[in-house]
Structure formats: structure tokens, C-alpha cells
Length: 323
Image (tube, rainbow, N blue to C red):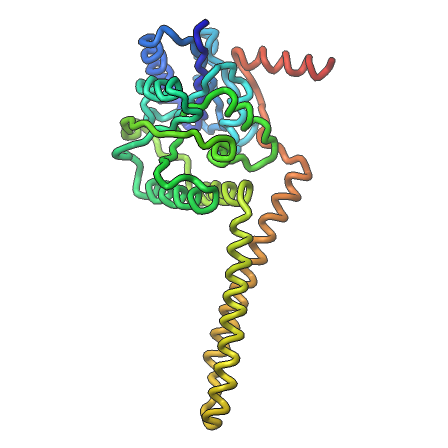
């Protein structure tokens, strides 16, 4: 029996590009007749007519389903929504703008067939803007330090994962999902495969500095307590430094009573210590706030409408809950 591949594509401002991405997927999968496939398109409350384009694609064929979120929840929440409507043995996630080459999905599948649980696409030359490249570097450093990512592993939005990995990720139902963190806590059997990276055909990236900061906070507050341990270590270091400086001041006063105690040095120390305290309190407050929101059952995402196979799945889920 042939394996089923599920493609999950979060969509935002992609009315002009999503049709070409789907066509490229079709052409790529026609060269791999050993696989069956389906496509799940998740509209992350795009302000243009992206969902109307998705609706049109779903009306033309039965292997595409569309999901529309009630508001903009972000790329990772959109991926989680799409995962719930996949049926494939392998799930492949890619972007809606054509920069991640759908034609090279076979490279990811070949590595999966070799026995790896997750395969990330690696780009020799990224065609992102300087801002996005900087964000990627910060994200790479954050995942390596806070989440234990191997240094040699390259992470991207174009990846393939086996069914059991996706099922494990779906066990996470709290708000603030971070797909990379969910993958890293599920398996270490991960590899890279090099693919090309294209220039954006149209539009601009939906990631702003605010969204990138929110994404990084999701990563290290939802899946790591290292920031709290770092805060504890910095507090200990600051306390030790203050204690040693106090001893030095006392000794200096005894050795030379005429040496004045510096007011500027004292104020600098107070400002530094006060700033550190406020930083640590803010970090602790961030954790407590996320706990509070999770206890309030804040939704990971809210689905406004489903079309295609997704609508049928939703009806089945509702009927099962009713029973």
C-alpha cells in the first residue's frame, strides 16, 4: 500500500502565489507515483482574498482542504491547526510564497525513507532580506542555547516529519505553540538536506520585529526553564560582586581613611542592581502570565470555516463529541 504525504501550508497574503505553489506540488508528486498526497491550506486570517483562492482550489478537487482561522494566530498556530486535519504517514510543511521549492520535496522524502524522523531543508544561499536573516540567526542561537538544538542542525520552515512526531506534537494543546520546540522534545533523529532557496515572487514577509520577538519568547518560555536558571546565576554573581566590592571598600577605608567613598560608583552599582532585579522580575512575570493564560484555556487557534475534506473531518469530530 502506497504511503500518503500530507502537505501543510500556512497562508498569509498569498492570493497571488498559493496557486503556483499548489501547481508545483502537483508536478513534483506526479514524478513520485509511489506516493499519494493531500494538501492542507491554512488561512491565517489574511487581509486579502487568500481564502477565496483556497475555496476555489478546494472546489476543483478532493485532495485539497482549506481552513480559515478567525484571527491572525501566527505561523506556528496555523501549522498546528493544519496538523489536526492531516491523514498522511509523512507531513511536509512549506511556505506559501514559493521561496521554499515544492519541486524538491522528494529530497526530504528520500531522507525520511532512510530512517530519519524529521528532515529540515537547508539553504546554501538564503534569499531573505537582511532583517529576516538576522532574525534567523537569533532564532538559531536561541534554540541552541535554550532548547538544546545540536549546533550542526539547521532549522527552517520547510521540513518533513513522520506521523508519530506529528501526533506527539498534537498532544500540546496550550496557547503559544512553537513547532521547533515540539520537534526537539520529541526526537533527536533529525537531519538536514540541502535545497535551493528562491527570491520572493511578490509581496513582503509577514514577520515584523514584534512577531519575531513574540516567536522567540514562545520558544524559550514554553519549552525551557534555562532563562530562570540564568537569572538565578546572574543574581548570585551580582550578589558576590557586591559583597566583594563591599569588603574592598572597607579595607580601602582602613588603609587610607582620607580616601572619599565615591558617590558615582555607589549610584552606578544601585542602578545596575536595580535594573537586574527588574529584568528578573519581568522574566518571572512572563512565565507566570503564560501559566495564567494557559489555566484560562486560551485557545491555540480558532477555526472560522473549513472547506473541502477539512469540513468533512470537522463534522465527524463534532458528531463523535456529541456521542
